[in-house]
Length: 239
Ligand code: IPE
Ligand code: IPE
Ligand code: MG
Image 1 (cartoon, rainbow, N blue to C red):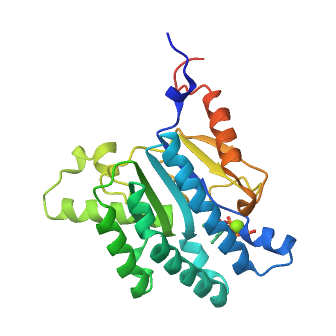
Image 2 (cartoon, rainbow, N blue to C red; image 1 turned 30 degrees about the horizontal axis):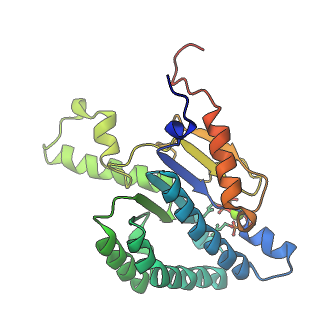
């Protein structure tokens, strides 16, 4: 038997990148500067995850509920997102990153939607890592959307209700085809899901980090992976 720890690198890591605003306040900066620094950290974590052999990384960048924030913060975040996609598209492509956006796309400004579609098209055959960016994402909306699509198929007699399995349900989520996360990390000390991947996290290991996202480093990330490696996952079997 080998106990090479690399064998236990999680296949899929999901992150709630929280604490940009509090970090900025602590540094006497604007919230937007916090988001800017946060986007740089996100960039670094994508590269680190790819180097470590993680196959899927899902980052919570903007929730359905975040639309309720001050309009200046929302438009600042959209501009930042646009710059991020524009400046990183080529680099992502070179690094073998396949980008996929999950969320209510129809709510995004047209310029961002077009850009997202371009980057998804450019990177669609990349194999090193799949980066799912959750933008305008809410898990309850995702589940309702799946229920509506399944309901239409039942109405059109293309699906028998008795044949609706977990697999069929998953096939109708935004995350169709992507395995469930093995590890969820939330920074900033908050311990809640905030409407993130509620179906997909059923058996995920949860890890809460007491640092604001802009202070989170690749070393912190690797520490969370070591903690994960020492967890025993049972999936309902006896201890
Ligand atoms: C996370 O940081 C980024 C987004 C939600 C867009 P926050 O903006 O939530 O920062 P805090 O939680 O207010 O400190
Ligand atoms: C969750 O963080 C969303 C993102 C990190 C993008 P929030 O800061 O919006 O969550 P709550 O409001 O503290 O639950
Ligand atoms: Mg927050």
